[in-house]
Length: 382
Image (cartoon, rainbow, N blue to C red):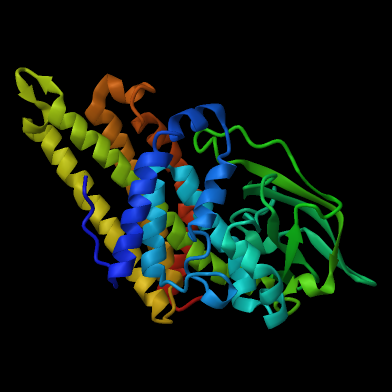
């Protein structure tokens, strides 16, 4: 199904067309086997890095493309439409670069950003812990001062790209002053004392590794502190605004993929001598699915345009993540229903889409947390 898009430039339209063709020809055919075998497609990330897709919203001077989030997020949507593992991976990588790109010093950016944005390195974002997921400010990972900088000890949990990432943006406690006692650090996969556990065995997104990352006395030089000491939680929250928009875009891409399969099936499958699309009960279901996808896309793009204009987006990002991921769950369930028994077996991808959609209601803050963020924003609370 063709997606009608409003894009700011002809170049952006060409970019989206290139990504759509790449997804159709190279990502979609690989997705079923890789998800079945839990095979992380590192070569795909190297390739899309070479295409310039791992640094789209960041400054050109450091290897990015300097594109607005309005365009970047639609790229993420198209990637997720073909293979959610890849769309999600691009979103997470971009989130992992955010702290350095926004709060790093000129020397830090010049030293590390080009490789991150140029595609030769893949990132992971480490905020959650086994006992502090939704309550991220309660994290316990500790960074103690040492003669040459800091030493980090603790365990991070639910880390996308854990064990396969080249760098990790890590939030750790430098004092006991609550949220104001958290700082942001840049770690690398070859740092002594950094190790990933066995990846989690997940219901969906099996090709995207999710693992605990354990820090055992990891020595970090002082120049790998991003921002000021104690500013890590503020950095994390600012990053999550953009990360939640990335999840919203992924959700819309996944919902669009499910809608594509359902509409195609309903047009080809015949019952009682008529195509399924001619039955009002089913055609109305497809109409509701299509309307929801369009509404979700409009919501995340409205938030993206606010972000590009320099306006606050905490409330809008939470709304987009909440609405789009709930919509993806509903559309994928309905797609299974449209296909009937065929929707429940692996011959068609909608059963996988349904399993994958559930994760999007949880990552980057559960949807219950999004409702909490939104309600607090309504009353002017932080």
